[in-house]
Structure formats: structure tokens, C-alpha cells
Image (tube, rainbow, N blue to C red; front, side):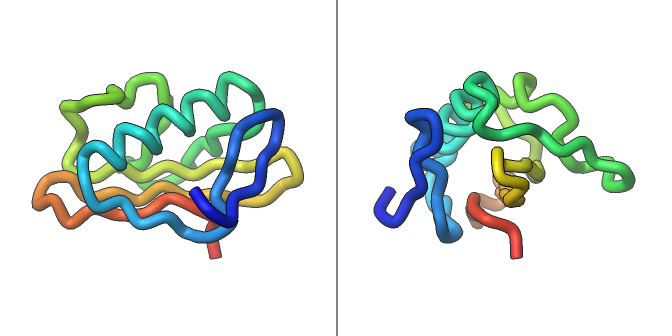
Length: 99
């Protein structure tokens, strides 16, 4: 991904990355899992929305996925990242810094 910030060998996007295919979503899931394992990202536990991911290890790399996959993360410097993907109708989604 061009324009990425590398932290601990993990490249996190500096801008939102559009997810338009299952293969792209799989690659993003694997990136996020590596970043979580390395401590580059930390999953932010949701307080209210029941549809957000509470344990990212339960998200399968190749599916099947929930109809909507939403997760919030915090980077090492406190920066916030967000994953928003609608899989049911295949409209895709994005991963990147929160606004």
C-alpha cells in the first residue's frame, strides 16, 4: 500500500484503503492480525454497538464473515484506526485512520 506508515515492520495505511473484493478483505484481515500480534495495533473494545468485533481472532481470514464487520483499533501513538466492511451485499468497505 502506497503512503503507508511502517511501525515494527507492519505497514499501516496513512489514508483509508478501499476494500472492493474478498481477496482484499482477506489481506487486510491478515495485516490487522499481524499488527495485533506485534502490538502495533490494539483492539478497542466497543461499549455500545453490538455489531462491532469484540475479539478479532474470531474473524476468519477467508470467511465466512458476518454481514457487517466493524472494528476499532488504537495505534502505538494513540492514533485511531477503523475497519468497516459490509459483506452481505458485497458493497465492500474500508480500513484506515478514523476521522
